[in-house]
Image (cartoon, rainbow, N blue to C red; front, side, top):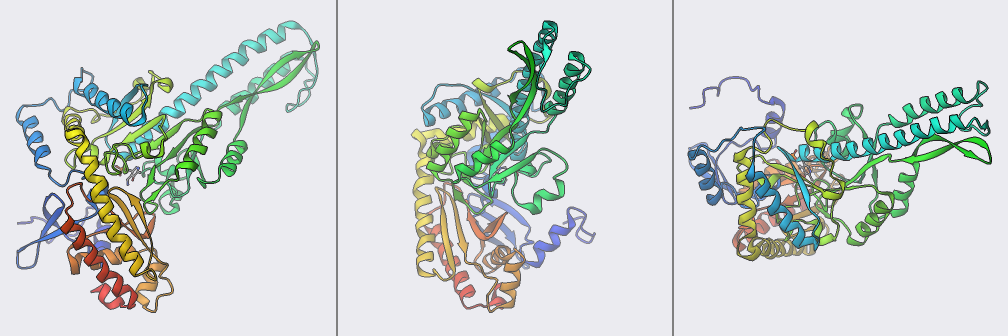
Length: 516
Ligand code: PMP
């Protein structure tokens, strides 16, 4: 019996009402494998095929029996879940397992240190903070070098020459040194900038939301933290110009021909470039390999680190553990979350390459819950399951992903007037509809104009076909498909059948059927 059934909704009440209006306000009472179950009005259990896959967090399926048994054994064995500031050998074990995979997939030997977190956004915030700490420490070192030089130059007693960009120093060298110091204090405190491809999604916390392109999520909070410049990934020239526009310098003094001049010394202004190898919320878009290679060359030349956000694309979904390994781009930072917790725990991790790692970060960043024995050991088991049998999980993701994509592509070929494009890699697939704002159905055109059409489709698919499908968050005319590696051929066929019916309803401009 539900003790609060007759009480008004207080738990995020708005979203509940909205979901109910679209027929999506279903209470699931059980889940297993690729299925979620609810009870109908008569109390009978109804199975729903879950193609949302916990928004990418159930690569091994819901309540994977191996993970559930292991979770039980951890709790039965009294695992010390919260034992902060003590030795955590399992955390090191997980870090090594991830390093071993990283070395294999990228053909490198460099180690990555691991910082633990609780969610995807938080793992990205770790990377963002670390990159900023690195930038600030570099600026600090540049300031210290300038400081030492200022005293040395002042001691020469040389005459003052050109002082631009500072005004002329009528009061002599002491006034000039003071003006340089004041200008540098301001320049060193300039907030950092982050770069990200258009469409990026990196979370909704105060710093990560600035790197999430969707203005609806981002703009109410843009005063809260450092800003991103969103760039077209394929336009290396535009990215180079954007970096150029952000250049920052410190002022220094130099003696040249016996005269003191003001000179400028570059300091880092761009903290990091963040990207998803396969953009999830932008509509499932696999980044272009050549564009990424050009970008990496440019960023290396500028010494700008790359944060590769594998929160959604990682953990085997693409057919490799790291989707970025398909693109040949190795992050300076790599973030993992979602499926790392095996659909049971909340786990996230930020891998930071040794050549950029700042030990002091560990003294200034932590979370009560991160690196707890329960989630960390579950994550180890997830990685072991993915790696088992020589990587059978990755082969399954590739094989079933190809079948799923083939089924979606055949729908696109048959209904090219309704379906615009099918994209994806492995078990991360998207089906985009054409713009439906001109539909003869008022329901369809209005929902399309309001950016909610994908949710209307979701309501229909759930109600009529027992399929759980959702649009991507920032491109709502694209439906996402991220089932577990255990999706069967029959389940793929069932998905295609439901989608075909949906597409026919859309083609017939039958808004009434969509609404139900
Ligand atoms: N990065 C990416 C690429 C994501 O897809 C998401 C979530 N959709 C996040 C970060 C944020 O993860 P979380 O919801 O766990 O904070």
